[in-house]
Image (cartoon, rainbow, N blue to C red; front, side, top):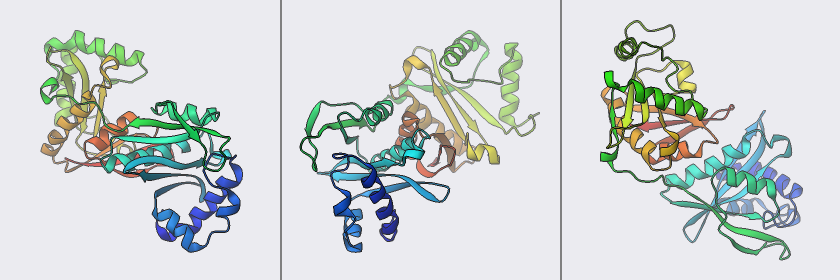
Length: 323
């Protein structure tokens, strides 16, 4: 929201204050409803604000606020009719992206102690309760949890720890093992696979060169990521061109890491090494997509320079990355 959007902000903030119980927002409806335009503009200038819309009406809001240089998630509210629809995930994700883009390493928030739905939401999105508590600003009898926090940076990995390469004749057993592990984890991996192995390798090579493509298919390069022991730990897929469907979901680059190696910075390193390969294919700005609730993937994309383009109505974050 820009400063001139103060009337929209006023309307949704007052609706939130009217519906909320004491202690949730640190201010009351009676006070805020009497504010002038100047007071609303001053309040907005102290934070960044995001508003979610559905059917041309605002249905939720969330803000980012710097407290002694440390970003906090504030003013989080979703209309009761829109709860459970993914709006909360989208709003939290917008504030996470804002904080990470500014180079911060951690995002904190406060939540009323017995607000179990909110605590469950934040826990699901990766926030951790740090145990510190204090009274609510507008009701000292209400206790808040202080500093649920979310790390904003992925783990680090050494470039030498990950190597991207094409599949080869000796990779069949490893590839099938990785495929089984990912499928068991609910991830569709190499859905075009069918034996025999030599025929599959030939099909990948033809796809890379754009030969004998299926209808609506595009040339793509499928790469394995292996560690220093030669174990396949993930993959990267570069689509050389984009259809309208891929522009919406899929984008130029997809990646995956095997379940037991996640959280180690490997995904970030896979994407970091994939970007210059995409540039060699003439892709100067890579399109990438992920679900709004996939904060791990959003963390990887923004860590590699991704800028959020839009969040679609069906819950997809669409980014552009310079290669």
